[in-house]
Length: 440
Length: 182
Image (cartoon, each protein chain N blue to C red):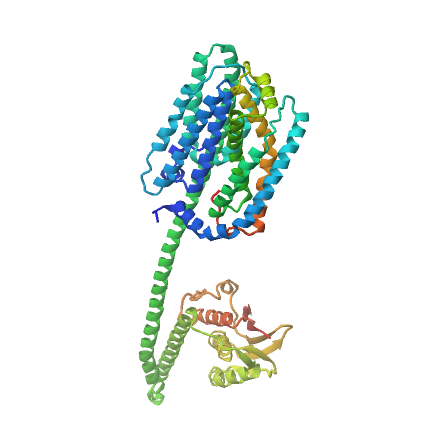
């Protein structure tokens, strides 16, 4: 039994529930008609048990059945026209009058227990299908019962017998009323929950639509921002390259030591600026997932040879000994992306570690290959290790162009595309190992 | 076609789809209906014998053909409604049977009482329930006859819908995927 006694007037879905109850499908009309037949029959049989003559019984039954059928016909006919007249309800109530015209005198009283059992059992069995027409049915039935009781009370000669019959009929009716009310409340609760569900569903759909619209706006803004970054980056390159060209083509023989030192500083700064613009443009494209991997068999030794050729000169300039350990392993991956990742490792090692030796090698594991770049530089502080993959993370020295953590972040994005994993191991004063684990 | 709203329009749409199913399976279902009518007839006879021994004061009416005849006609009407409205669930058939049988029993009893019944049974009922014995039984006798016939019909009411539903499922009548309004 439902624990909540639902009150229609307190619900914001009141109109919806009333509308649903009033809109009956043909099936519901037929079921309701069957219920009316049952109630009318029970009433007629109860009256017969209390003394109504067979002729009166038959005439009452025929009249009531005809009225119900007319009501059903009217409901089917008027359904959907938006204006169902209450003619059926009115002419159904006329069935009460039939009781007065078709009465017989009381002769003997039927067994009260039989009346109670029959009325309760049959009415209860038919009530599960009656909830949609509950209120009007009970009002009419109550009226009929009340009129009949009053009639028999005042018109009968043998009051005592009538009391014996009225009491069980009344008890039966009260039982039926309570059960019907319980079923009605259950049905109203069910309708209420249905309306709540549809309300929440429409709310969810509305919110989804606004979320989708917000996502589209965000994506557009993001694309616009990325586009702006690319344009600004490309536009910045031109003056930076011009400065770089001018600085590197300067005749150093005409400069003093102090001026040479300033020029050297300027060159390094221009280099850093170039690297920074490069990194910003790269990470912009990686975050847009513009990169597609082209998987093929990659010989690790080919990677090492390429990197050694690229970084030998820079390493020599910085007095760094760059060593690559020979390797005969191969992996299935994208050569281009692996090169970029290892370039990032090498760039970081060359630029930030202040090392004298950088070693590049590979080691076979059970189901993957570790490619490592090891330097013997200053190492990375433990506090900074947690923010290593976050772009633009600071270190203790504050933000400077040489300390932006874009390189590792870019490498991680590329590693995700290749289904590879990056591990950074570092110790202050001992150096850093950047390990790229590739599936075999 | 009438303009109907909501579920009412869906009802008519589904029902017109199934008109062909009704005509296609009509012969098969008449055969099933005849079998079920015979089953009901036999059940009523058996229960009359059994109930006399179980219930004190039970008066058998020995009215079998009338009840069986009404069952045959009404079950054909139900078949039409079931196919038309895609009643696929057993609950629908049980509900319909329970809802329909009491009025039908009452009508059958009325016809039996009013349009003549065997002399022996008439006298038996009149003496048991009526203060005055006349050509037409009193209301109390009619009420008791209705009650007795109701009790007698109850096993049939509870078993026949299940057989009915099985028959419809067996012959794959109607649309198994269609929705049920009940």
